[in-house]
Length: 290
Ligand code: ATP
Image (cartoon, rainbow, N blue to C red; front, side, top):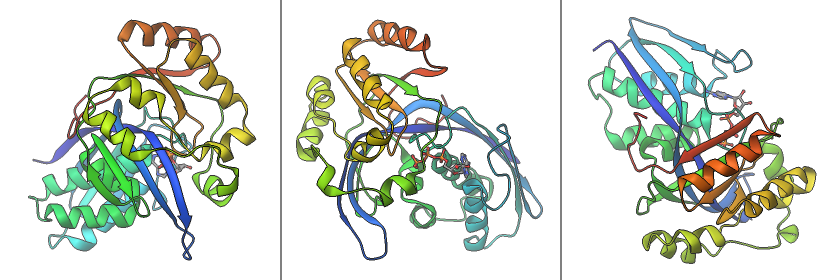
């Protein structure tokens, strides 16, 4: 086998709580992450040496700054066999949108390289490399529905919430995750998620309770600066969503819907005002070939 093509999903955050700021600048978080069927295509070809990277978007870095490149670098520094990789990223996941696109690409490169190089690294080694690259990278090795704690890299698998209709609206600006965390002030948080209640709702597949109780404390930063995001959330409810929140540090806002027709109707309404609107579904673990 010389080349692997893998479809790597985006994620949404069904909840985000930031518990405290650590001395090293990281934050202690508790969040529920959910993979959805919006995919980047990651193609990895085995070569004799060197890493090269191509990307369908001109403004995404194509060198060591790309997290997919860093993933390959880390793979080869831990793998006993020598070799190289030609990486091609076909981006569908909006960039710097709170959907975890870069992290997902990086996880895809790790999975593809390990398959191409005869599974020379054990799952636990791959997981440790992913964790060091970024908390979200480790999530994307399996996807599905997971609880993330600590700095986001202590992961627990939850029952998979598959097949729930999700509509995403990505406004025409990007938000830096670093900026959001730097400006996070716990005193400005109005409501924190009840994570145990959300997990019980996931276990019971009670989508209404889940959707109605989703919270993201980072909205206290991003929505304050971009009030348009609150308007999008209000519109989602008006259009029949069971609940609506910002994903990650934004600016993408999503709504959960009871069935495909109501989600499709909302997508069509948002399409009048926004270019990047997607009707997706939540997916289970290992669902990488959409
Ligand atoms: P998160 O939800 O984890 O905060 P995000 O979806 O908001 O992530 P990304 O799309 O991963 O953000 O991009 C964040 C930044 O990383 C961008 O400024 C981009 O230039 C850079 N970047 C590096 N590698 C990639 C990649 N493979 N795909 C997209 N962006 C990348």
